[in-house]
Image (cartoon, rainbow over all chains, first blue to last red; front, top):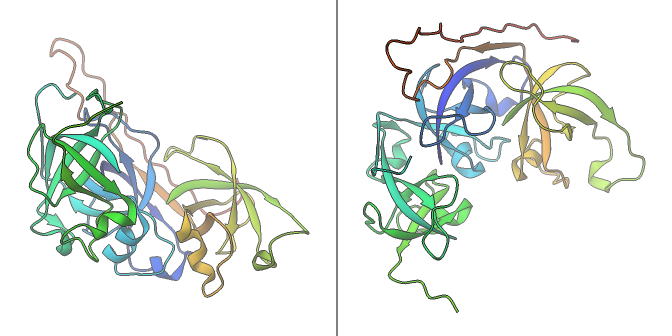
Length: 93
Length: 88
Length: 119
């Protein structure tokens, strides 16, 4: 799982049937110091997150599929948690 | 499996119901001699690890074989606390 | 899943039997701001996407799931055609702000909206 920030939303009419009814979010994975970690990815939303929210991103198939309730579908990333707070040991970033 | 150090914790109240009651820790991978490596990962704690402890973490679908993680949306789990590492 | 644009297609006469009849597309990964990022790759088409379209694609074993019960040996598949992109991001929100004396730059927010269709 990674810490990420929601930076946008995608609208797609023609998509795999398993994605119907779930928001498609553009999420930017973050480093611990809050900087961008690689490129933004597309994830299905399981917790009703919105743009600007800091979230927990599952980056593995089963976790992503089951959190949006769609097993055996082409989903490899999902937003599975809404982060309230992060605590770090001193000196780590 | 990777060697890592616990460097933080994530608090999320709104999350997948199957994650409720699970402690989410931030791990930083380390080399066998204890040096920090790049990157981090958020992991579910199954062994009551604490801050700064060296741990063993498992990733991918194997993480769901950890204690209490069956059929949960977990892709990384802490499965052991390291006492010592010996290198030949 | 990842964001991208279809920039071409690939034809192969000799291929794995499970791949017969599958279209293969060349996809260029994009950032949310529609800039190219990384190298183009080949994705199997699971949705009927065409050249120039903005799409999103999936990587890994999950890419073969649209073709169940067949299990083609593929690791990337286009699974959606993007009609619109809405992006709003402030650069490095978590990085400590510059000293108060320095002029504060306006947040670099953007909104892209793009209709489905050729580039």
